[in-house]
Length: 192
Image (cartoon, rainbow, N blue to C red; front, side):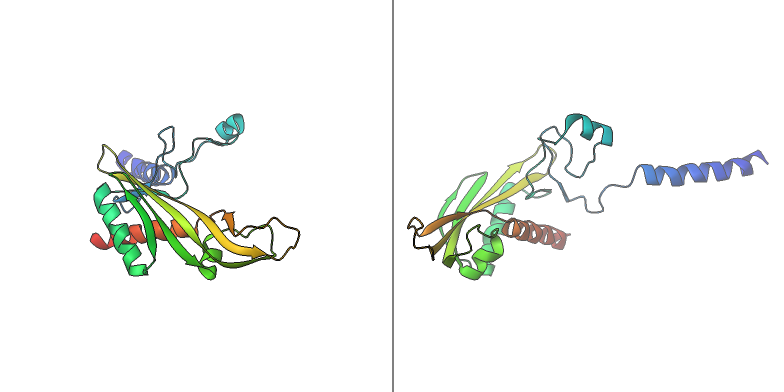
């Protein structure tokens, strides 16, 4: 009789623990990047800690992922990715951990990858993007892959009183970086 009375208690404890301690990601080959203090970017702090400390200054880069792949394999994948997209690249520099290159963009691609410019009176012709891919191998078999892009737009201002220039710095909206991170994640899932 006592065993039957304990079974519902044990079962309810198991169910409660499943909600309190959810299972880790179903894909062990991909995980969020670590924050500066060593927490995963997916980890949440208690509300009281957030209120006490204010904004978190130790968040990981937004366009970063850790993958179970060597740094060289990740960079080779991105070179293949760029060839498949038929992007015109130049000014490439590569090392063991960093690969930078410049891509040429038409005005539609420039608008797709950048935040809107404050002055709407500029007639854009196109632009260029400087892309940096950083791969850092971790001790546990993962590689942190971080992608950052900056852009310059080429165009003329319709404002006759504005300073004459052809190149305008533009801020990334994160689309290019996210597109490349998502492509890497799909590639890794296809390897399994």
